[in-house]
Length: 450
Image (cartoon, rainbow, N blue to C red; front, top):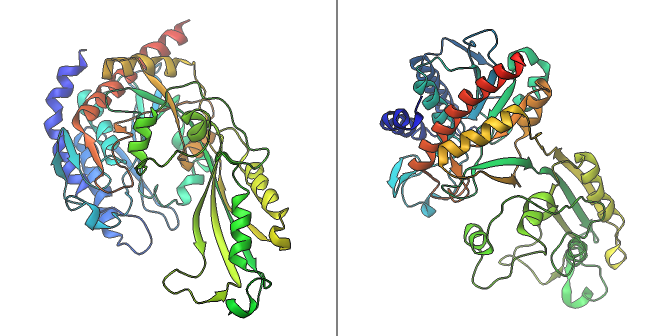
């Protein structure tokens, strides 16, 4: 079957359905209404039924938006089963004054559409629907389609799959919450860094004291905290906490110019750290001060600060044990006595990274499929972000190969103002996923026969 012409014939309908889905503000964060999330759920159930899916279930978990779990039976007993994943909730729009058009009014841009969640992750759900339509509801494999409604905030579903392994049993998974390193460059993500949080506090006085009368001898909590935070990186900006795993990166990567543009680095401000960008972003650690409690500049009085607190976000190598990585940071901070003052260090949430196995039949089929979809040789990258559910799904189906690719690209502004998706990426992702199902079914049967 030649997939390109069939995909082209579907693009008009896929665009229309993407616009319908992206117009729904399905934000599953506290303080936002639940009705739009339910509306997006109902629309997807309708679209799945129209695409020929008959078995569709709703999974309800405590304090969690509904999860859609749909099944398409395998066409023959010797056909494999593939799990297709996506999420229909989105990030909040943030400051809408920074958007060029209303975030929930899908708006044409050159080669695509702009809107919150239109790339992350509604485009990839539309890819799954496109593949179902391309095969007229009868793909060459069995399918388990999992569309969750609270990925961005986190939920009880992250840890649920291992408790119900039969529901998620499969031979391979396509985790479609990723995309290409740049438009037109087919990309497999082969690693996700883990994440952890640590809070560090300093208390030195019972209350603020006049800086003229007491400054110079009274211990300033903010100065103590600043000295502590300054020990986390060396003179180059590399993480100075011992024992955090860092390795050379051998896959594809951004050019420095690409990264500066993507990160919005101002003027001639130098980048942080040394070594390749891949090491700094994917196969090595990063520590970011994501919040700090101290008197504001506008409200600051002439007083010695008695209390200061900072929240740190640690990202670590995909294979580093999350508790051990977090403990490395805690131990580093707890051992400090900046200006002779002890710190209070409190570990927070931590989540593992993920590194899928490569080299199996699904992986080989994906390489062929990505070449067919984009007409170019696939690249390999990792991600500094994390997808907690991947570990849960992998534990539920430990023998399944896990593939991460999709219709997003690194320039799509996910989680930022003016998020967009390109139609060229959407089309290529439909072709690639459809080709993967075809190639994997053939390889699976061949392997069984052998």
